[in-house]
Length: 133
Image (cartoon, rainbow, N blue to C red; front, side):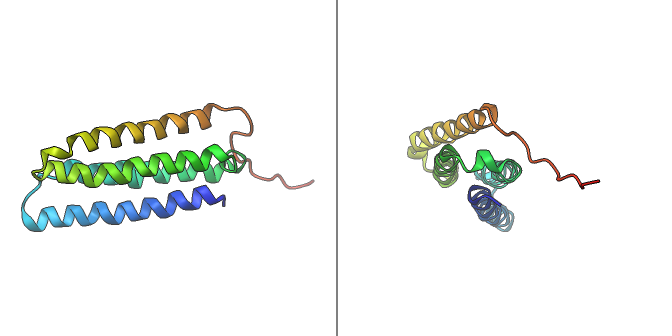
């Protein structure tokens, strides 16, 4: 499996652990004010990163391109900054709003870079090997 795919899967599971931990904390405390941060950790962190990893696992030629690792770094930086900043903003620190905005733009830039990878030329999908007759 390509390195970038492995990194995406490892990072995705970290975000799943964070997202579930946030959900448990909200349930125990009875305070659901950080639901948006919980949702972003799970959707942008766990789900989207797992999908990105799956795409790269199925498209190893594209995964080996330098842009794939750059895209991973940009998207991951955006989400890693967004989730805690959003959590802090939603739990009573409105001064985090500019950080949330910048992190959102960084994450979106990562999504646009991923779109570029998908739409770029070259091999687009792994094909199963066929048995010789």
